[in-house]
Length: 290
Ligand SMILES: Nc1ncnc2c1ncn2[C@@H]1O[C@H](COP(=O)(O)OP(=O)(O)OP(=O)(O)O)[C@@H](O)[C@H]1O
Image (cartoon, rainbow, N blue to C red):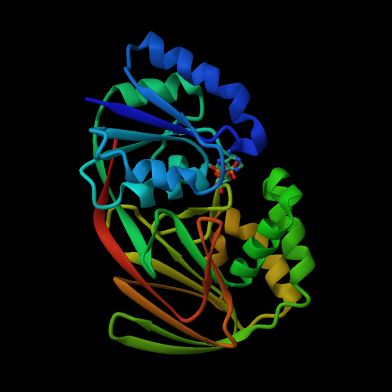
């Protein structure tokens, strides 16, 4: 069984370069034969993973964080390849979703078990997303973080800084939402999050009831509140208790359409995916994870 490891040494704010030899030590100790590709630039992992089937690989493992996971998952789409992850990023929400340990020894041991599990994926405009899609305020925060590279390097602190910067200037929007055959209109909407996983931004439980293998999209809408009310609500997103607020609504479905006035930014697992309108579909059990 040929295994390819795609390693992003830049992940984890550059710490993966130092941690990677530890992973390699345990891979060799457990006799996992593998080839290695070290990425030289953003998006390269997509192209490398895209060629993996033609090169006879049965397993492709991302070594990095959620950005690397996203690139590899998109690259192997449509190929008969099982996906694995050795978490080495900052947030590691995909690994958290599957209880994959951060400790290199334990993570490599889990990989060596070769147990397979099927995981749902989301698809938006031809792009696959494994964790969560954020539309509106959340998308604007992701845009701000991606614009300012040092904010990426300070992890969750960068998220909070961008949030504080934007909370008093971001204009809430009108949203027409269609979930399967149900239609809704929300005024003064701050954000809508669509989750396959409950985890986002390094452990925040934005869609706390989301399950990665239930064939459903979980939708969380935050609307009709002042900037100060939103700020007060924010810490409760780490426990998932924000959904108890009367102006937070949770829904589920298989197809979500979002139309907003004005158009607002969208991110998928922290990567910018464009602006509304958007259509998000669930692809049940689309990914085999080892
Ligand atoms: N050689 C490289 N140089 C610079 N950037 C790279 C390189 N290889 C990959 N990248 C980019 O690094 C970015 C960050 O990687 P990744 O998301 O895996 O780590 P992270 O941000 O630390 O983790 P997380 O997303 O879990 O918080 C990705 O968007 C990827 O495109």
